[in-house]
Length: 342
Image (cartoon, rainbow, N blue to C red; front, side):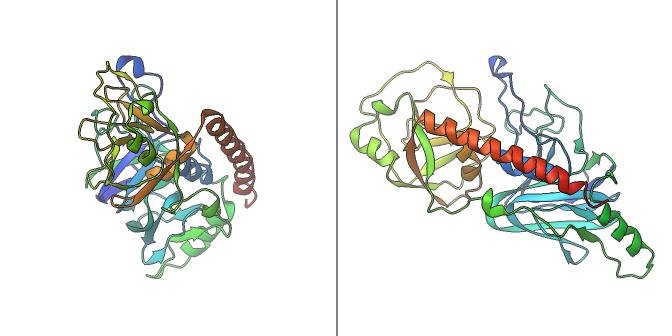
């Protein structure tokens, strides 16, 4: 084993790129709420971008490193310390065997991702290691608990060679105040990838049943400010404070839904589905959050405000392709940087 859970935090789960391709048999994708932060954390330690990592919500766990570990933290601005030393975010960090990684509260954002070089080794279930807590699916189908052990591959010494040299040099000193944290002098700029400004709207496309809303509700959906309900979770965000109503009752058979689908239950409080959304739903589909804004929605906390700005499929596709091209260029650069220090 490489990581032992001493205390689990508020909600810490194993997540990867998701369990795709099984909607026809009633299995949702699950996976990371903020897939971009997951991908960036994995990039920083040389993993495949969809490798399994820890998703940490609002307050993190306390973990013991059983071996030397090369890690990266991306996403929310989390308080991270190891043996009294600050663990920097958005860069590769080498932690000494035996040290304790304490992940506390988050100053900005709601979810952080802890990637470990080599990934977290759990048996795949339907092609994924993701924990789908709502469905009870996955190799660890629940949040982390104290006493859990997570196996990780040995940290490859071909990555971040200068960190290994510094660790070996520090190990010569047998004093009590050993350095536990060794980080690179370069990092990613979170401003390019991480947006938690609640003044920025979430872009969405009018849904199949948008025209069935009454006039005031159509205007409110793309104009009013909602509040994320305190009982929101990985299945969906309740959008409160604004009443949304149909012009007339309608009856629907269940239809396909996906993360980002905004449904309208009978109570008039819309729900924006998130990572653990079921593959079908029977409520009116009034909007669809575009793919590149799902990470921004995932980083909103309960109580945060959210506004929707209407866009269309062509704009959503263009922005998605632009993001993927930018990530591909970044991956090439990070891959080069990881191997320059040996």
